[in-house]
Image (cartoon, rainbow, N blue to C red; front, side, top):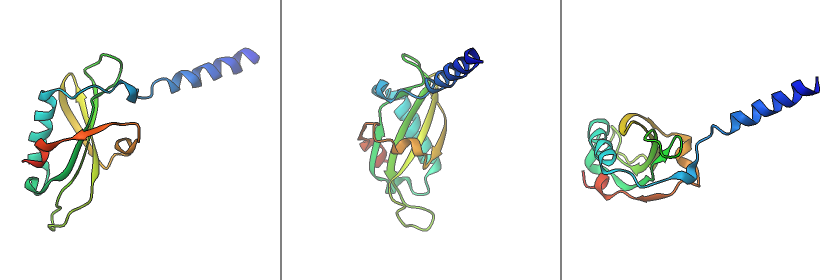
Length: 124
């Protein structure tokens, strides 16, 4: 019985190690930035209204991987012409290609994520 309890404890701890390593952030590749900019033009109601834009470093799924995510924070106008406030969007990257994005993702509010100005997004 004791062995079973120890095994269960090890399995629980092993599950904890699959969390994203935010400390492994590295600069975002120019090709990924270009894909984000292209996607913003297609998704935002008023891409020319973007202000206060920031981008995080690339956070790989595993060390050295080309799979991971980037967070982008920005303020832009909505369908009614009002600014929505800065919102974080999680941009998924697989094999160096942007595959998906999730607006208002809580991961982008993690205080350990380092952000840098993203003037290219403000200049759409």
